[in-house]
Length: 219
Length: 219
DNA sequence: ACCTGAACACCGTTCAAGT
DNA sequence: ACCTGAACACCGTTCAAGT
Image (tube, rainbow over the protein chains, first blue to last red):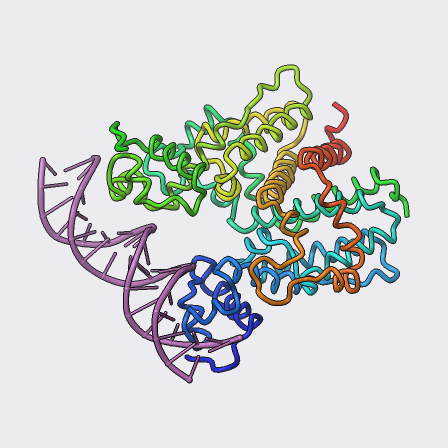
């Protein structure tokens, strides 16, 4: 199906995101992308230096979808909450592309909008530069890590008795109980966790920590 | 250089880790790995179902290097600190392979040793099952995210004026100041951050949060 | 059971050539 | 400036054949 339309950096990234949504990052090839755009793979190189640049472009596209709440009348905690939950929602909606949002930082103005919104809310609340940078980093780390856990079905894999794909040394329940009794004990509780609930727990823990530690705490 | 030695799941994973340490994950191919082992790529398939299984095996190898402190006489906070710092150190020592440690959960007994140690320390301190699972998840999220930020030189890229590889729409300092003034303001503080210092800040924040929230707090 | 070589169906990217 | 087709140097994995 050759889509005929002027080639654009934007259109290429959008089509790439579509392909990734359907087939995953490994399912994206320059050849397939070219075909989907109604041209050859080589025409893409007019707009992006290489495949990695395309992937970075896809990341910008996703990050642009994150809410950037104006902070009028909102507590800084509430602004941060909205951004964090929106970030998580966007990454789940493009779950195949989520690793790109983790790997490539926002660089375009659209992709940076939510960062600006967050920084402004913290500034208003009286955080100094270092505290803002520090809070941003801690929140970024937490959201990246959360995504990583939620993406791979991290615990689903961990709970499976067998080492995935390894043909020997599968972990029998017996050896588990013997050598790793506490792991065996806690496993059910890990399996019972709800992603959203645990995300909230950690997020509120961090927000409370900010309030305790930064000078701006009470505002 | 054909290394002649009996082929083993373990030896294959070790050689794969060596290759990744040198050339990165993309630098690992089944063909090169086979050559390094003194055979063909195909002989590897006797021990691993596919390339992904090899990567999961490499992850187990790395995770086995993480310290698993015995909790005798140690405060639970101190046990967690040692594990977290060791995890970080191991991933930095195998920085090219670090994404594997994030992607593949520990499944072999050796790789699970540090998890067992951590769980045991929390159990001793009086944490119930749910609190242990919850703490583990929060700490895992934080360490994964930290790694992701430290790995890609996340802020280094973010600080560069240009969107990497995109040929248009590079972000000029002027448009930055105009549309993203707070981002422009905070950028220097982000560039000044020290990885280890920020890691400690977030880790201690989380540990304090655990003490506040779990019933076992004071012990 | 373990290893092999040839073959299949792909890749990203370069380059010379076209408009 | 933008697009193209052929070519280069690779991939992971299957399969039939060997020991």
